[in-house]
Length: 280
Image (cartoon, rainbow, N blue to C red; front, top):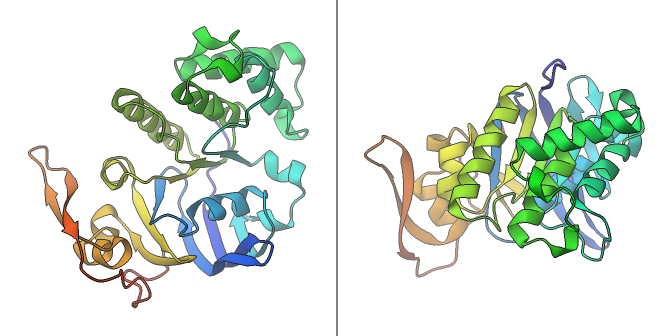
């Protein structure tokens, strides 16, 4: 369990993207509090994954990204790896490693801080991480032979083995069945409760409403709405960003959920004035 001091995340004037294709444009967001799960939602190609990649240092970015008192954009890759861990949508293929070897390798990827531990201690940490995710039985299986859902859980283990302060998860439930979706998001909430700052990209709005403390709606590389579940995912926001008519209602367990009635007859007006502002 993590014992580091909780640190909030503040993003100011962040721009990021790829060669000749900017995606994130002058984004300001936060503070994003430690101990909470913040879900990033929005249509395809809105910039959600790009934002996580920029925060993880995997693509070029300008602006300021403060985790506590430290600006992540001014740190070396090694320094940033001691603070932040990124879980991609899918692990690369063609890696001839067992599950345990791949998790150990991820732990060794950060050369600083408490990760400079001996091999046996790192192995024990890797096994404990797999056990926490319920996939310790796969430790000696080759990663490329796993199902999509199993590979996703291994990807989460690779992120967690570093014991990061900032956890960046890109669609961690997309290849999982319903039972494992609930299990992973329950674990994500537990990880946040240990003092981590957690940002997770989710496409399932009802899952985001169920599991997140805060919602950030991203459209066209900017923050369109942000706030609690009830504040950020209103019928008006959903109509403007997703182009569908929807109702937000409470179920018999008093939980908010979204019912989509149908596509709107005109294009989403996601360039309209942002609802909820850029605050955290």
